[in-house]
Length: 97
Length: 358
Image (cartoon, rainbow over all chains, first blue to last red; front, top):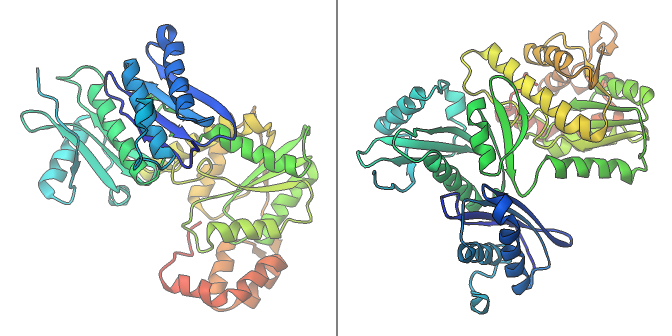
């Protein structure tokens, strides 16, 4: 799936994550900010990367501000942001859920 | 434990809402409610507690967050702040704005950094931060690429000039020539805000057209990082002079720490400023703030006969339909453009475009 424009999903509330996805030439870069980055940073980035891979996103710039989100939340926010960024919100990607 | 309240839009045109909003912000130490600041606000959001009093608010003006105030008396530290900021970001996202700025008091800087904002410059009085899908790093890379496209790499003496060029005159040209002679590479940053008689695109094109023969000069847009609405806001400071000094200090430090450092700029050139008070203060502040990292060189204004060349005079000549009188003051490229677009430019002046500012 191709990222066509910048999109945002999620909030900065406790237990949520705010995810902004924008275009990149190649590869996936993640700029993660989290109070629990030391312990869970790799895990959070892995969830985002896996979700992107499952959706067929190969090039994207991700800015994530985590407020202690669980993996299922991170996944849901990533999917929402990608669908908005790829302008495919009318065709939900059920299979990746 | 108070019930969580949803964020809602505040109608500041309602006098009762406005009064509560202003009193709430004043209780938090925000005191500038001048009409010119309030006019810029596009939307204001707020949160009320269960007793119906305001506990948090924030506004957007274009891509700048303003009047952010939060009372944490009865809530978990930071929760109202995070709710308001994420509501403002989502609001801007709906409008297609993903790159935003805030300038705020020093004590709130850490709160913004905590939600992903990146600090651009700070003084004792305030901090300017940005967040989103683009940043100053991307901008600097684009500028460096523009120099690389002209094969101007691995140079050691780099000069810079920031100009509005409304329009580009021989005075500007003289400044650029001086810098081009003394440096291996000169960046000319053209102010990006579209509030001048000549549009940003026109000003940029005329500077480029007027300097094509200078092979070591690279003309780029100053984007939002130089003398823009973002770096020059008039916010919570009581007096006008204080405000100018404060804003220009932020602008100078942003240039020194984010732009000059990354692009290896060693000298910034300024035209001497005999007329404009604001620009005069700006020049003073630049001379205090930039050295020793960046040398400041003030070049005396170019004169034509007894007159000092200024873009203001050129605009007045346009208004008076007396273009011939400033023929010797502008490069042929600028003169041609003014001749070809005379009616359109004069129409803009008639529609009320101020020609006596910067």
